[in-house]
Length: 212
Image (tube, rainbow, N blue to C red):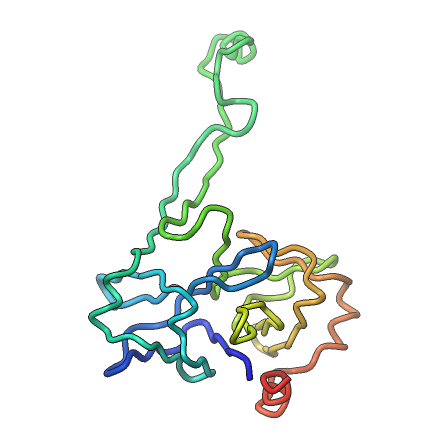
């Protein structure tokens, strides 16, 4: 059996429900889940990074942990910080070239880049959440909804991708088709005509995937 991490699913501790599954932390090279992000609260939210070893089982409806609710606070808090910095090549405005001269004496216009910092997870690891986009050679396919992983090693075996709005569908995509797994997007091989080979997410199809 495998873990079925449905993003947004209830997280159940020993004695009570404790928040929602906000995301999974992945080591990109090994494509292995190392941690999960559990978000608590509605208005004043906080989130914690919990090691995969604490997960006893994970189903579509809920994820079950081996610890009590009061133990969650012992683990690192997860935060995101967004900051702006000059684009590459503009870091030292005035260093080696006169931006004032280039702009006719006016203050230079320096392009800025926004970067999101994920505090609480290991450097080089990436977070997959419900906003993570999935692309192929033709462009956007949809967004990650489930991450299926081996319950012993944590290795990702499949992704369930939510595709479309009005006529929405969920595709079960084998991890073997993933060419790049990054913080900003997941890229899978091929173009749109390949999408027909992927199974649709149904209780029957997932029973087969989880039992493999």
